[in-house]
Length: 89
Image (cartoon, rainbow, N blue to C red; front, side):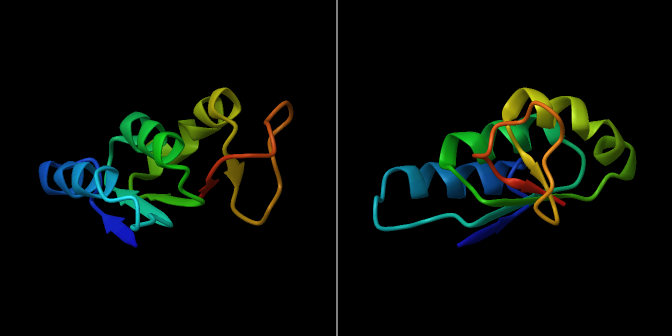
């Protein structure tokens, strides 16, 4: 399942439903501007792919990526990043 707008109210409700139904798997999340919450959601649900629309947030993302172990799209990891975590697009 892919949740578009996962940091908004409907996206958060969808993730709450998924959290209570073990048969559902999230493979992708996206949001407009809230990169911090997007990263938290991706790590909490073990999501392999995330996308962030806001260009400025994407530019500042490498700091968050290093802290969260998120890989960059294309399979290259920033220095010091763990091998597990979502791909940041």
